[in-house]
Length: 106
Image 1 (tube, rainbow, N blue to C red):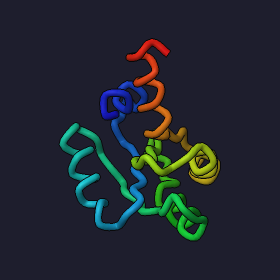
Image 2 (image 1 turned 90 degrees about the horizontal axis):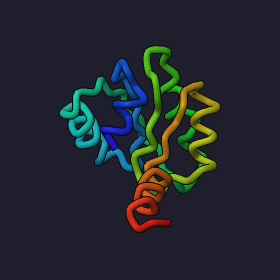
Image 3 (image 1 turned 180 degrees about the vertical axis):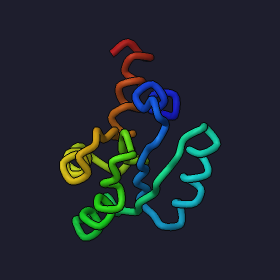
């Protein structure tokens, strides 16, 4: 995922959405170790309660992309973050599935 994000984000300034508060510091460390400047927001993929707050944290004009870094985030959540942040939003779930499909010839 970091290699894909690096191709898309030339400035390497990204927003990461993690589903659990306890994963935020590890996610930040992981992405920063790969050379990214990271802003983290926490949002459960199972409800709408946190979406607007998390998106507001990532509506930073310096961020190039937002990455929903959890397999439980779906396309509707991606579309919502893209609309609220005004940034292209990547869905880990979709990228993993497409890469797996390419590997198995599907």
